[in-house]
Length: 80
Image 1 (cartoon, helix red, strand yellow):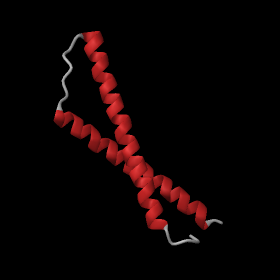
Image 2: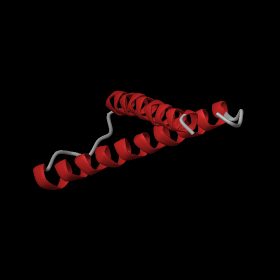
Image 3: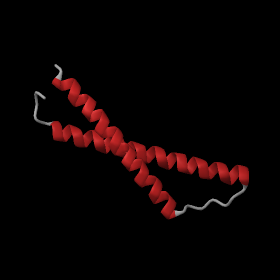
Image 4: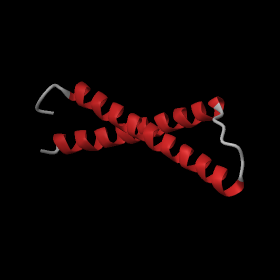
């Protein structure tokens, strides 16, 4: 890379992907709970253990996607 800010770019990409994946997971969780409440009549309750597992899985997915995108970016920069 021409500049030495690779660590800063890596961390920014990771943080952006992790937070985005967490946000999407929370929206999907709330949408599913709302659907079940209105369609099935099941009481709306938030299970903290289930929610933490979803957030951990989304964070891991964001980390993997962010690292992959950073690797593609790094490969593109080195080929220039």
